[in-house]
Image 1 (tube, one colour):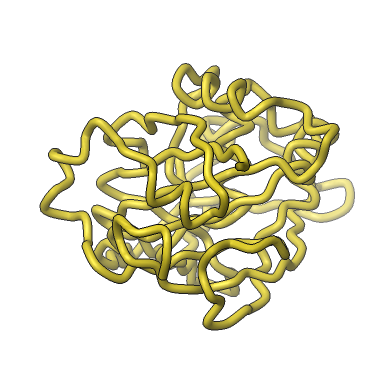
Image 2 (tube, rainbow, N blue to C red):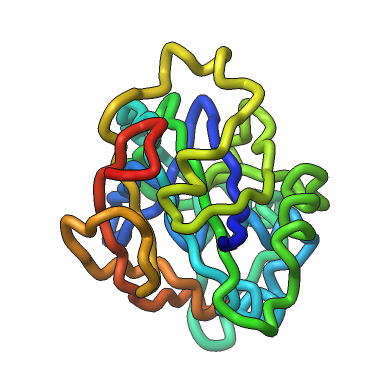
Length: 248
Protein backbone atom coordinates (compact mmCIF):
# COMPACT_ATOMS: atom_id res chain seq x y z
CA UNK A 1 0.00 0.00 0.00
CA UNK A 2 1.13 3.53 -0.77
CA UNK A 3 0.16 6.85 0.80
CA UNK A 4 -1.36 9.66 -1.25
CA UNK A 5 -2.35 13.20 -0.33
CA UNK A 6 -5.70 13.98 -1.96
CA UNK A 7 -7.61 17.28 -2.01
CA UNK A 8 -10.26 19.00 -4.10
CA UNK A 9 -10.14 22.36 -5.87
CA UNK A 10 -13.34 24.23 -6.68
CA UNK A 11 -14.02 27.88 -7.35
CA UNK A 12 -16.34 30.08 -9.35
CA UNK A 13 -13.37 30.90 -11.61
CA UNK A 14 -9.97 29.31 -12.17
CA UNK A 15 -7.11 29.90 -14.60
CA UNK A 16 -4.47 27.22 -15.23
CA UNK A 17 -1.96 28.99 -17.44
CA UNK A 18 -0.91 27.59 -20.79
CA UNK A 19 2.02 28.92 -22.83
CA UNK A 20 1.29 32.63 -23.26
CA UNK A 21 2.41 34.44 -26.40
CA UNK A 22 1.55 38.04 -27.17
CA UNK A 23 -1.86 39.29 -26.10
CA UNK A 24 -3.46 35.87 -25.46
CA UNK A 25 -3.45 34.30 -21.97
CA UNK A 26 -5.05 30.84 -22.44
CA UNK A 27 -5.82 28.23 -19.79
CA UNK A 28 -5.87 24.44 -19.60
CA UNK A 29 -9.00 22.78 -18.26
CA UNK A 30 -7.04 21.14 -15.42
CA UNK A 31 -4.47 22.52 -12.96
CA UNK A 32 -0.86 22.99 -14.01
CA UNK A 33 2.07 21.66 -12.01
CA UNK A 34 3.33 25.17 -11.26
CA UNK A 35 -0.11 26.14 -9.92
CA UNK A 36 -0.38 23.09 -7.65
CA UNK A 37 3.08 23.46 -6.15
CA UNK A 38 2.60 27.20 -5.85
CA UNK A 39 -0.56 26.44 -3.90
CA UNK A 40 1.33 24.01 -1.65
CA UNK A 41 4.07 26.59 -1.12
CA UNK A 42 1.52 29.24 -0.14
CA UNK A 43 -0.09 26.85 2.32
CA UNK A 44 3.31 26.16 3.91
CA UNK A 45 4.22 29.85 4.07
CA UNK A 46 7.03 29.67 1.49
CA UNK A 47 7.55 33.05 -0.15
CA UNK A 48 8.08 33.53 -3.88
CA UNK A 49 11.71 34.63 -3.50
CA UNK A 50 12.69 31.48 -1.56
CA UNK A 51 13.74 29.61 -4.68
CA UNK A 52 15.67 26.84 -2.89
CA UNK A 53 12.65 25.88 -0.79
CA UNK A 54 10.37 26.09 -3.82
CA UNK A 55 12.70 23.87 -5.84
CA UNK A 56 13.00 21.31 -3.03
CA UNK A 57 9.22 21.15 -2.76
CA UNK A 58 8.64 20.71 -6.48
CA UNK A 59 11.37 18.09 -6.94
CA UNK A 60 10.35 15.81 -4.07
CA UNK A 61 6.77 14.96 -5.08
CA UNK A 62 4.71 13.78 -8.03
CA UNK A 63 1.15 14.76 -8.85
CA UNK A 64 -2.01 13.70 -10.64
CA UNK A 65 -5.27 15.47 -11.43
CA UNK A 66 -8.71 13.98 -11.99
CA UNK A 67 -11.10 16.30 -13.82
CA UNK A 68 -14.44 15.96 -12.02
CA UNK A 69 -15.98 18.90 -13.89
CA UNK A 70 -14.16 20.74 -16.69
CA UNK A 71 -16.14 23.93 -16.20
CA UNK A 72 -17.18 26.44 -18.83
CA UNK A 73 -14.72 28.64 -20.71
CA UNK A 74 -14.90 32.39 -20.00
CA UNK A 75 -12.83 34.81 -22.08
CA UNK A 76 -12.12 38.25 -20.63
CA UNK A 77 -11.10 41.20 -22.80
CA UNK A 78 -8.61 42.87 -20.48
CA UNK A 79 -7.09 46.36 -20.51
CA UNK A 80 -4.32 47.58 -18.24
CA UNK A 81 -2.45 50.86 -17.96
CA UNK A 82 1.33 50.58 -17.64
CA UNK A 83 4.13 53.16 -17.38
CA UNK A 84 7.07 53.24 -19.79
CA UNK A 85 10.00 51.09 -18.61
CA UNK A 86 12.67 53.38 -20.10
CA UNK A 87 16.19 52.44 -21.14
CA UNK A 88 19.70 52.87 -19.79
CA UNK A 89 19.92 55.64 -17.21
CA UNK A 90 16.27 56.49 -17.81
CA UNK A 91 15.11 52.99 -16.94
CA UNK A 92 12.42 53.00 -14.26
CA UNK A 93 11.52 50.43 -11.63
CA UNK A 94 8.30 50.47 -9.64
CA UNK A 95 7.73 48.72 -6.31
CA UNK A 96 3.94 48.89 -6.27
CA UNK A 97 1.01 49.32 -8.61
CA UNK A 98 0.34 52.66 -6.92
CA UNK A 99 3.79 53.90 -7.97
CA UNK A 100 3.14 52.79 -11.54
CA UNK A 101 -0.02 54.85 -11.77
CA UNK A 102 1.46 57.89 -9.99
CA UNK A 103 3.18 59.18 -13.14
CA UNK A 104 1.36 61.70 -15.36
CA UNK A 105 -1.64 60.16 -17.09
CA UNK A 106 -0.44 61.19 -20.56
CA UNK A 107 2.70 59.05 -20.05
CA UNK A 108 0.74 55.85 -19.39
CA UNK A 109 0.24 53.28 -22.12
CA UNK A 110 -2.61 50.78 -22.45
CA UNK A 111 -1.95 47.07 -22.89
CA UNK A 112 -4.71 44.92 -24.39
CA UNK A 113 -5.03 41.20 -23.78
CA UNK A 114 -7.53 38.35 -23.58
CA UNK A 115 -7.50 36.15 -20.47
CA UNK A 116 -9.22 32.78 -20.28
CA UNK A 117 -10.85 31.26 -17.20
CA UNK A 118 -12.74 28.07 -16.35
CA UNK A 119 -16.00 28.67 -14.48
CA UNK A 120 -17.35 26.07 -12.01
CA UNK A 121 -14.47 23.66 -12.64
CA UNK A 122 -13.82 20.88 -10.10
CA UNK A 123 -10.56 18.93 -9.86
CA UNK A 124 -9.29 16.28 -7.46
CA UNK A 125 -5.52 16.55 -6.95
CA UNK A 126 -3.32 13.69 -5.76
CA UNK A 127 0.25 14.13 -4.43
CA UNK A 128 2.76 11.44 -3.46
CA UNK A 129 6.39 11.44 -2.36
CA UNK A 130 9.05 10.75 -4.99
CA UNK A 131 12.04 11.16 -2.68
CA UNK A 132 12.98 9.81 0.74
CA UNK A 133 14.36 13.25 1.55
CA UNK A 134 11.08 15.07 0.86
CA UNK A 135 10.99 18.23 3.01
CA UNK A 136 7.49 17.52 4.37
CA UNK A 137 5.40 14.46 5.10
CA UNK A 138 2.06 14.12 3.35
CA UNK A 139 0.36 14.70 6.71
CA UNK A 140 2.22 18.00 7.10
CA UNK A 141 1.14 19.05 3.61
CA UNK A 142 -2.47 18.12 4.38
CA UNK A 143 -2.43 20.13 7.62
CA UNK A 144 -0.96 23.12 5.78
CA UNK A 145 -3.61 22.98 3.05
CA UNK A 146 -6.39 22.82 5.63
CA UNK A 147 -4.86 25.69 7.65
CA UNK A 148 -2.81 27.70 5.10
CA UNK A 149 -0.34 30.46 5.97
CA UNK A 150 -1.12 32.51 2.86
CA UNK A 151 -4.41 32.79 0.96
CA UNK A 152 -4.91 30.01 -1.58
CA UNK A 153 -6.23 30.77 -5.05
CA UNK A 154 -6.84 28.96 -8.32
CA UNK A 155 -4.14 30.18 -10.68
CA UNK A 156 -4.82 33.90 -10.32
CA UNK A 157 -5.36 36.08 -7.26
CA UNK A 158 -8.77 36.98 -8.69
CA UNK A 159 -9.81 33.30 -8.42
CA UNK A 160 -10.29 32.37 -4.75
CA UNK A 161 -11.44 28.97 -3.52
CA UNK A 162 -15.18 28.64 -3.04
CA UNK A 163 -14.97 25.59 -0.74
CA UNK A 164 -12.33 24.13 1.61
CA UNK A 165 -9.90 21.72 -0.03
CA UNK A 166 -10.52 18.98 2.60
CA UNK A 167 -6.96 17.64 2.23
CA UNK A 168 -6.52 14.09 3.50
CA UNK A 169 -4.01 11.25 3.34
CA UNK A 170 -5.38 8.00 1.93
CA UNK A 171 -3.81 4.60 1.26
CA UNK A 172 -4.05 2.64 -1.97
CA UNK A 173 -2.21 0.12 -4.10
CA UNK A 174 -2.31 2.51 -7.05
CA UNK A 175 -3.20 6.07 -7.92
CA UNK A 176 -6.55 4.91 -9.33
CA UNK A 177 -7.40 3.10 -6.08
CA UNK A 178 -6.60 6.19 -4.01
CA UNK A 179 -8.75 8.43 -6.23
CA UNK A 180 -11.63 5.95 -6.09
CA UNK A 181 -11.46 5.64 -2.29
CA UNK A 182 -11.42 9.33 -1.34
CA UNK A 183 -14.61 11.03 -0.15
CA UNK A 184 -15.30 14.70 0.46
CA UNK A 185 -17.90 16.10 2.92
CA UNK A 186 -19.26 18.66 0.44
CA UNK A 187 -20.17 16.24 -2.38
CA UNK A 188 -23.85 17.17 -2.04
CA UNK A 189 -23.07 20.86 -2.62
CA UNK A 190 -21.43 20.03 -5.95
CA UNK A 191 -23.88 17.35 -7.05
CA UNK A 192 -25.05 19.42 -9.99
CA UNK A 193 -21.49 19.86 -11.29
CA UNK A 194 -19.76 16.54 -10.62
CA UNK A 195 -19.64 14.17 -13.56
CA UNK A 196 -20.17 10.44 -13.30
CA UNK A 197 -18.92 7.64 -15.49
CA UNK A 198 -15.67 8.10 -17.39
CA UNK A 199 -13.39 10.77 -15.92
CA UNK A 200 -10.14 12.07 -17.36
CA UNK A 201 -7.01 11.66 -15.24
CA UNK A 202 -3.61 13.29 -15.85
CA UNK A 203 -0.53 12.09 -13.99
CA UNK A 204 3.27 11.95 -14.06
CA UNK A 205 5.91 9.35 -13.15
CA UNK A 206 6.67 5.82 -14.30
CA UNK A 207 4.95 3.82 -11.55
CA UNK A 208 1.81 1.74 -12.16
CA UNK A 209 -1.09 4.18 -11.89
CA UNK A 210 -3.79 1.54 -12.28
CA UNK A 211 -5.03 3.47 -15.32
CA UNK A 212 -3.96 2.63 -18.90
CA UNK A 213 -2.31 5.64 -20.49
CA UNK A 214 -4.10 6.72 -23.65
CA UNK A 215 -1.33 9.14 -24.57
CA UNK A 216 1.67 10.98 -23.12
CA UNK A 217 2.48 14.58 -24.01
CA UNK A 218 5.02 17.17 -22.94
CA UNK A 219 3.70 19.97 -20.79
CA UNK A 220 5.79 23.04 -20.05
CA UNK A 221 4.67 23.82 -16.51
CA UNK A 222 7.48 22.65 -14.22
CA UNK A 223 8.69 25.71 -12.26
CA UNK A 224 12.43 26.32 -12.66
CA UNK A 225 12.84 29.91 -11.49
CA UNK A 226 10.21 32.21 -10.05
CA UNK A 227 12.50 35.24 -10.40
CA UNK A 228 13.12 34.64 -14.10
CA UNK A 229 9.66 33.18 -14.70
CA UNK A 230 11.10 30.04 -16.33
CA UNK A 231 9.40 26.67 -16.74
CA UNK A 232 10.64 23.27 -17.85
CA UNK A 233 8.92 20.39 -19.61
CA UNK A 234 7.63 17.11 -18.17
CA UNK A 235 5.82 14.07 -19.58
CA UNK A 236 2.14 14.05 -18.63
CA UNK A 237 0.16 10.84 -19.05
CA UNK A 238 -3.53 10.88 -19.84
CA UNK A 239 -6.08 8.12 -19.22
CA UNK A 240 -9.69 7.41 -18.33
CA UNK A 241 -11.09 5.99 -15.10
CA UNK A 242 -14.68 5.28 -14.16
CA UNK A 243 -16.05 7.35 -11.29
CA UNK A 244 -16.25 5.28 -8.10
CA UNK A 245 -14.09 2.46 -9.48
CA UNK A 246 -10.34 1.90 -9.03
CA UNK A 247 -10.14 0.58 -12.56
CA UNK A 248 -10.58 2.34 -15.88
